[in-house]
Length: 185
Image (tube, rainbow, N blue to C red; front, side, top):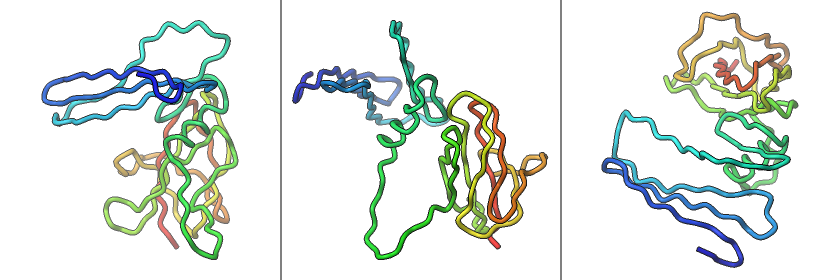
């Protein structure tokens, strides 16, 4: 396929009762290859993944995954720019973030209410650069205490990170995913 100078390929696959169409494109002058997938999935309790078994010879390479990347430092930002575009809302006031970090390697991936309806806030973040990262998570709301949970929001029996004046002190191992549950105060 070729449109507006963009070269690409479209691959159609079937597995079980499901189908997938994967589109791989390279725009003129672009430093990246874009891959998208449209999936009509009918299986349950099965694992779905995309594999890219490539042999690449290059001086530099970067790959963005859901929880981290290996390679060029700007790949995480570029991945978020593509997958999570900025949403604009009309209004006259500034909207402060509910949770933010100042370290490029600490990425907030979700801020949401707890699934149990308690009104607690769940913040999920991960280390994205493949190196130990120490930093601060600044909260845009009053909260106490902090509880470390698993991805299903069940508490871990582990000491929580410190919370002082709306700031949580963090140290994450390479590519670690951390889920925090906070009670609004």
